[in-house]
Image 1 (cartoon, rainbow, N blue to C red):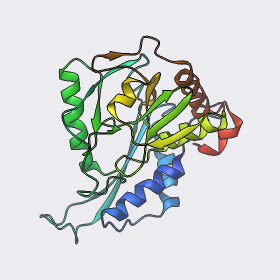
Image 2: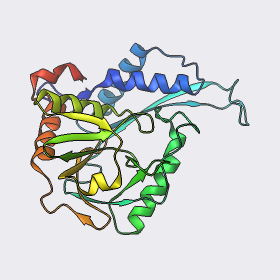
Image 3: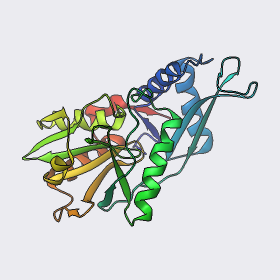
Length: 257
């Protein structure tokens, strides 16, 4: 919610990513970017949502069975509902998953495809059954990839690092936080991150559409006693201010309902 009413954060970028993912899946979407933006805003308005989550989905509809979807109609659904903080407001405990992030040559790792989330579900359930809040998946080379539905950042000696693209989702919140950090004069670098890099970091946090900026307080047996660290706390506050329209610099990211 903003002082101008409900607003969708970076709606254009989300719809563009949705359409890009559909193209990756060989789908011919019967709606334009502008139509999907308008439909999203109308859905939020009609449901009277002041704050919550929006989930647009493009899928093959009824008309054909089998592994070749060509010939089935392409349908679009847009859902929205009130939803609080996905992982809560406290620092979370994360577990290194025994499941690895999908190999980039086995799929389009950069696309937000529903089928990828089976991998995420396995990792998340495994972590919760072990008493943790969330998981961290390594890539096929054993380096840090991402959470089941979140990108990951660490802070070391005042600098911010995040896994390079190629085997992680290029998250919109990831991009937003990166821009905000750089606007604050902070250095943000993409690089290969090992488990040792993470456990030797001063701070760690997740980003995601649902997770927003979530403080990580523990990975496996390693605990950050100072969590949230000063940089994470600052970025979390600035991100939430941007979402709620309190920072004029980022009003361009808001689509008022």
